[in-house]
Amino acid sequence: MAVDLSPIDEGLLAEIANIHGMPKGAFNIRKDGQLVERHSSANIEIATKTDNPGIDIHIKAGTKGETVYIPVIVTQAGLKDVVYNTFYIGDDCDVTIIAGCGIHNESHEASEHDGIHSFYCGKNSHVRYVEKHYGEGKGTGDRILNPVTNVYMEDGSSCEMELTQLRGVTSTVRDTNAELARDAKLVLTEKLLTHDDQIATSNMKVELNGEGSSVQVISRSVAQDNSVQVFNPLVIGNAECRGHVQCDAIIMGKAKVTAIPGIEAASEDAMLVHEAAIGKIAGDQITKLMTLGLTEEEAEQEILEDFLS
Image 1 (spheres, rainbow, N blue to C red):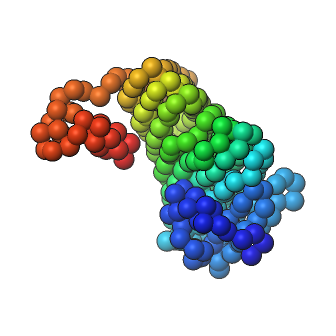
Image 2 (cartoon, rainbow, N blue to C red; image 1 turned 120 degrees about the horizontal axis):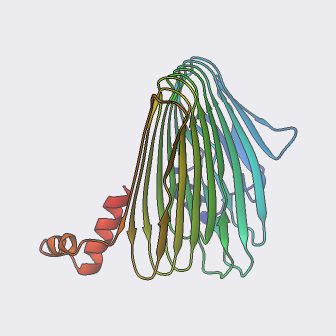
């Protein structure tokens, strides 16, 4: 093990990836820009990049039922960590990828992690990708996460992406881009919680290039206190395809939420829909839960957790 893990490190890994100790199978754990520990499996090879900081993950064709973990934690004040991770998923695979970044900052200096992830999904493969972001610490320094996710999907492939930002991230700009070939299917679910003076921007561009391709974009967010959120998805239909963009946000305090869902058709056979809703928690929801014995604060928290689940 190149880097020892402290109790703080272990807590971050549990929060973002549900890791307790070292996982089984293929994994790569990174802390403060350094490798903690890495293992490949018979079907999944993880190798250090030669051109940029980061790793290449090669998943053999036909691999099924395996999970690979690639979490990152940052505890060093003033660090700006940039990493490039590229996934090459062979044909006819069915795999799960668990990522995420947790930042613990006790200082007045900013800590930042920028993860650039690219996925090449082989024909008829299914990929489930789970990414959680989380920040903690009593310091005044910013906890910054700027992820970039690029997805390239071949014929018949399917991908489920769950992108979640938990509490404590001061600032984030998320860029997600996807290109879908014939009969490819993408479900992109984003869950976001901001509070205090945090700022979060989510930009998405999904190009439906192949006949029979489809995408479903689901955004659920809660903006509290003085935080600001911007949701800016764009789905482009270049063939006979289907696309649906849905944004639901709960706004509290003096927060501000801007939703700009966009659809663009370059084929008469493209079927694209977008919708957005922003509002406060309904008073009758709180009243109903309070009749069951919850306090107003407990009722509010229950509603928020259910909304983001």
